[in-house]
Length: 391
Image (cartoon, rainbow, N blue to C red; front, side, top):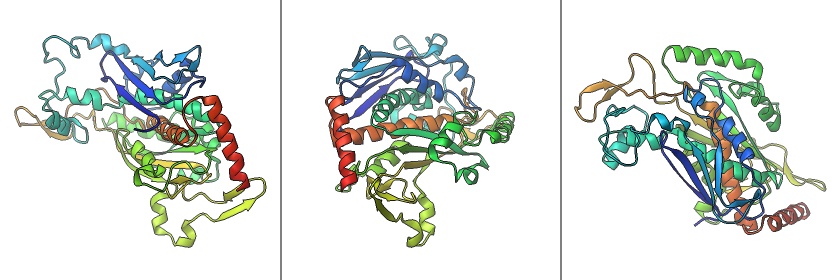
């Protein structure tokens, strides 16, 4: 069992989404307002669907916090689904099943068919309600708690969109510092660090919407101020880069993850791939490049952690002629099912990526420095930072 863990529960159109976090130390200051700001960021982004106009996510902290500080006991978070009132008969916990909104035509690219086969469902709504990216609401809430913990010791996390569909700003942002990229992305409707390019992206999204299509893309998440030595090389499942990759791949529709320059490194000579080591009295050991993305040998190396993720287009298509599918009951060919959806959710996925990186880094911090009293832990972190400068 890890030092920090969380479980979440709830269906997309059920009464509420909940999460329980175990392992957060005592005396960490946290507020519902702080968490709600992160939840609001997840709901933003040009190309989101109609549900964002319905759901205005607000967290309720039910346990583990008293007078604005954590108690060291499990923290329970709940976000109510405002749309629940329209689904009470369809998603009822008790009573008899209804054929309203029953889904028997699985969508290509979604969990519908394998989930239905695995769990023995004749109504695929039982699958999509839990497989839905609505589940990430609670991940962002949990991530907010972890972000607050990391901020207290000088670790900042941010994200930005690099591309949507065929449009990319990767070449335009090479010389922009990470935190400045994040600041600019927060001013962009599509969360790119070059807001003046927004209109190009919005036109592409509008075109996709007109054609009933969806769009994927690539986003990057970073963490600055990360101390050396989080994670470990001594066992495969303690390598931090592996844990980060798994966390990102667990986000709905993510199909690829890179750390640092990732696959590009495989095309370079060794002399062009690795980050040379330097030292001075003020900084201690440091690197002038960060091709490794802040991780070497499964451990942080003191440079910013940089994670890049590729998101496929959302499986739900609103075209008149949708993708070919087969009815699970009649075995007759049909167009795949349609469910209210986004045209693109890459900007929102980037915010979810921030949450997942925060969760993994917070766990690594607590593994190294303890997880009892946060005030004591912060002192140990500072002592360790001083040690790394003297090493």
